[in-house]
Structure formats: C-alpha cells, structure tokens
Image (cartoon, rainbow over all chains, first blue to last red; front, side, top):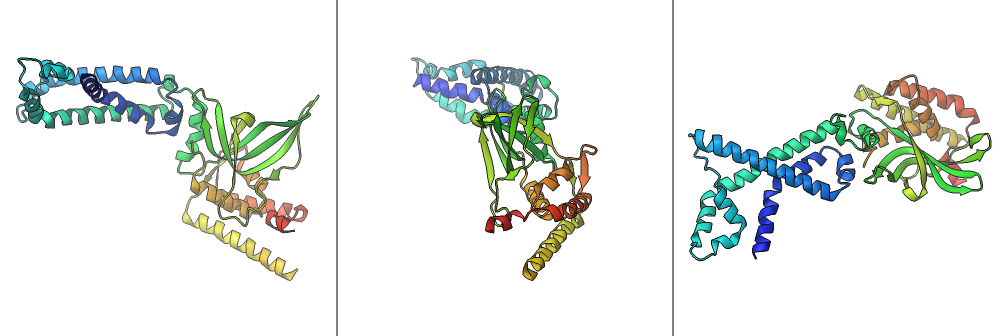
Length: 284
Length: 68
C-alpha cells in the first residue's frame, strides 16, 4: 500500500514535467514523432523540470503569496505535512491521529488542486513556447533533424507549398534501378532521422541505368495510377525504408491564390477543356 | 508526418486535369527555378500554353488509354 501510494504521489508531483514535454511536442509533428529518442533522458528531464518548478513555487508561495497577499488567504506550503503525505505510513503510526490526514485534505483540497493546475498549465505553456521556438528555427541545439521541419513547413503554410520527391529504390535488375517520383503526401522518420517510409501522391515510375559514364535516366516516366480520371479516392504509393536507397526532395514554386476568382477561373478552364474533349469524342 | 494538405492535393489534381492528365506539365510550371512563387492565374495560363504545345504529339490521355 505504501509503495503504491508513494508512486501515486510521485507521479502527481512529476505532473509539471510531463506537462512541459506535452507542450513541447504539441506545436509540431516532428518533435512528437522523433524527439523522444531516449525515454530515459526524457524521464530525467521530467524529474529535473518538476523539481525546479516545485522549488520555485515553494519559494513564491512561502515568501510572497502566503505572507504578503492579504486579500486572499493563500495557505503556506507545510513541507513537514507534505513529506508525511508521501509516507502515508506516517499517518498510521501510533500516536498520529487518522483524522489529521483527512482533515488536511478536506481543508486544503481546493488549494492543492489549484496548485497542480497552475504549475501544470504554466509548464505546459512554457513547453509549448519552447516547441514553437524550435519550430521557427531558434533553439538550434534542440533541433535534431532540420530537414524534417522544412518538409513540414508546407503543411503549416496558408499557401500551397508542394514538395516533389524523387526516390531511388533498391529494386534493380543488373545495372538498372527502379526510380519513383511524385508529390510528397506523408513522411515518417525514425528517431535517428532516417526515413521510415514515404507516401507519394500522383506517383510515377521510371528506370535509371548505371553506366560507366554515369547514371542515365529513362526518358519516359510511367504513371502508376492509370485511371486517375475515374477514381474518386486518389491512390497513393507507400515506399518503406527497405526499398529506399535515397530521396531527393524538391520544393516546388509556392502557388498563390490571390482571390476567389482565381479558383473559379481554374474550375471554368477545366470545365471548358472537358466539355471540348467530350464534343471531340462524340464527333468521332 | 503529414506534408500534403488536403486542399493542396485537390488543387494539384485540378491542375493535372487542366493539363489534360499530364502531370509533367504541372511539374514543369511549378518547378521554375527563376521564381519561388507563382499566382494561380499565371500558372493556369502557362499550363494551358504548354498543354496546347504538347497536344499534337501527346498520346491518348490515361483514362482513354486504360479503356482501350
């Protein structure tokens, strides 16, 4: 019972540290998916952050809030009671009346909850701020794989930023290697920054021959989706790390839609094209 | 990690449709090394111009080819 209780208390005390890392990972997918490379190091971070947050809160409450804040009767933190709370046995020792524990909780439960909500929210916000700074290229020491942030930039932008990926596969026959290209749809990196898999939209395949004078790319690229005009759900190509030799990422020109009229003009142009194609087909 | 937004995918597919199913034309327009961005109106004009240039030599569009 005492071990379980101590575990519960420790987990609650570590709440600010967990909140910090939750906030740190919240702004972007890159840190959420890649950063916890060492769970042990992260746990150490949780403990250290929680320690300093509680120390700072203790200092603030006991030297300022509970002494010099008369409009609201903020109670001081009683470290003796806290340490007794961690060792629940202290409340059941001979000479220690049981009601002390219950009475303490009944009396201070609001302040205890407020304390953990406040410390959790503040450290969560601090983590979120740190995550934002990392995302925008600051705190470079925490940025392990910068290229992942560059890939993610397009998704966060209001404008259309497409990235084309050229994937050299490991599938080969003699000197000829299969090559894929397409619009990068999804991407997953392992904790060490290497590619786990990539997903391509509108994928094409071609061949690359490795000759004595250098690699020679085939002139024709064959679309994998041969019925693109018919499907409502668009197909995609998934290539896993076992089949990826390397990837060349090419960010395309940013496509600006300056007004709603631009989108309407595009729809109109497509309609005109498809109507004229329909007329041509019916005449044949 | 999601890279391609749904609205960007829809826009790209529309541009490919405008290019008569030839995604190579769209890529050619959007990978101009002399600029970092292009407005949609200009992109539409350039795609239409390239589509019209490629038209006589172009093979049947893919859906047609698939039904042959």
